[in-house]
Length: 347
Image (cartoon, rainbow, N blue to C red; front, side, top):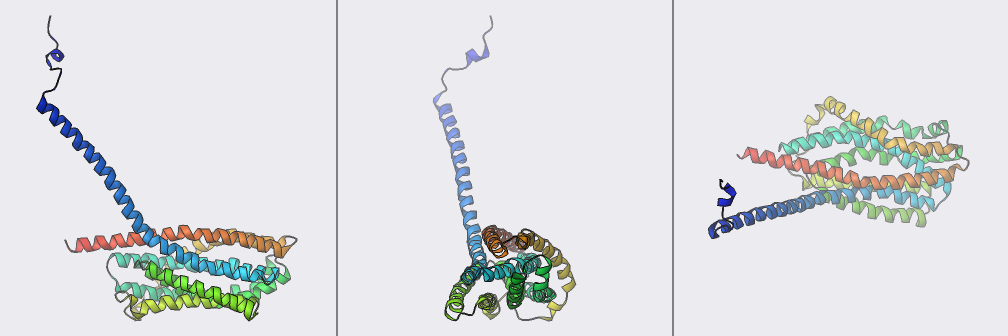
């Protein structure tokens, strides 16, 4: 009978072979542990980078939106009618123009991100000035919503008292509306350069001032509902001046080289790029706020408007967190593009 091949093999592996197998197994184990360790370290590093951008972005958005929340809180201490008026003016009329102009400003974020990634830093300032022109013109076109707020609200079913008071508040909120073209674009301009910490500090300072001014106007000076609207105007423009001062007074020496006539060229291209985004975000930001308009058909209009506006405000407040992460994602992409551009340039 033949002997099987397996019977010729030794039952025990010799010393040198056994050592080689053990060393190979240990090496494979070290590699697996190294891969896991590298993954954990890389995840930790990327998370730190993301939070370094997302944290200030979230804080700045929460701070700016908190101004509206604080204003509504102070208006609630005046009367139900005043709270309903400031709620409709800020969460319906302002919300529509806010969404439209914010969407248009996203075009600047795209252009500045591309220029920053290509290391064409001087183009950031030109794009910024171009966006000021386009967005400010559109903010003027949206002014009839504030001027004719009272008849529009009555046509939509609001009571005469609420519509009249909301129309008065809307007129006093026009300065706040006119600050949007500069606030949104300056934020995008600095955000693309990863200067989110500056935006957070300025927004936090404006919020602190807003709380003090609101307390002063409502409780000490007793200015009434008009005073609450004026506090929003003042605080938003204070933030704009802070961002503008930082950008043009040495904070961005490479991207801001002064006012340029080049901003007047290419406006039509920026217009086409920004309008579609503006309409999309305006509708997205406005559709659920129509609930406040529908509440005008309820029996107790003022109470219904107050309750719905508080719920919608809390929902919008929470949405600032994912918006901050969205901004961090864009900033990380532009930073990565800039690093890749520098790497290929020096190869």
